[in-house]
Length: 483
Image 1: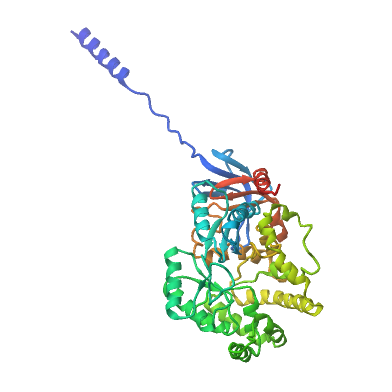
Image 2: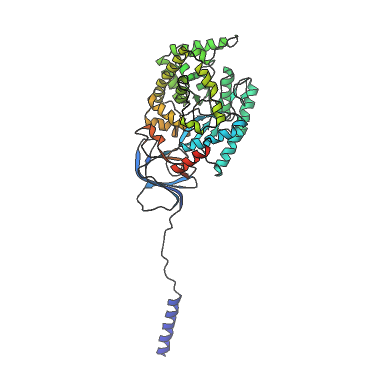
């Protein structure tokens, strides 16, 4: 009996042992990222600090991880070697133009390649007549059908009756202003651009108020029949170029403004360029300090556009016939450059001398505004009709001019990255290198904080989470080069 009990017990034990499953071995599956940039030095554009030997992991257009590069390998569809290289956020050009009507639509679209190939991953279109095309480009880029920068756009400009630029919304009365701003709101533009070719001072101020009521930012040129202080107090978010800031730096601003207003009902109304010599002669450091403090208090930004000012002031001596970038500018756009070139060549020697003297004075304003806390935005003003201001390279040149004016390389980088994102209200998701931020990045072979010209030493661009190595960027440029 004991024998059978023992046999039965052994049989059950064997059966249980046979049914037992081996213990699972716990393994951690590494994520497969879209892009990994390893062993790179990150440039913090907020603090100016360097973070060496970092790895940046990217998935679905977003930065997922930023951590010390202490692992042997990372799984990625695209691997970018960051060893000896510097990573900054992609650059922002906060003043460009897509315009010229349907006949220049294809030529304008080629500029998207030029921006991206030169490290600009975001642009702000400052008004034109190609709004439907811009919306289509944005849709195609988000779908991965087209490579190019993210685009913020104002849509059509707002101006007065018989406006200079085609496609402008012409306003004078309050009902016209309301309709114009409502139409832009329905278009879902990103901000409102006001132009000063024909708009009255009162219509300009009322447009600011109406846009603000609808939650839209305003920026633009300003008629000399109003003061910048009036516009800032109404809620103007940014002023383009330095002509309008400069007028506010005059000790006689009020009397000069009154002179312009009184002239509007005469056969020879006074405009910006007629008044500039008087503004120059009455420049006041005290007046400049007052307007800069007011702008800083109200967070009114400025886009200096120094490079285009310098270029235009020197056109009589330099016709840019040998510029290598002309090979990438569509002949139809090059044809739009002739008007300003011809005008510059007809200037008197005295007018040329004043233009260059004025531009030199503009340079002195930039570090003063920076010190006062005025937000500075880097913009090139590139686009059709703006002679020899090439998409992509002109923003690189603008940063160098900002440094020549007195900004540090870090401040210039901020003007072309985080400042633009703050202005457009998207700094929480872009323009710095951190987990959760958009993967729009620029990889350089030298430190831009040592020399701002190093922004031209591009090793790779990352746009919407896709990496474009230098060889790919060269191929993109080749595709848009003129035959």
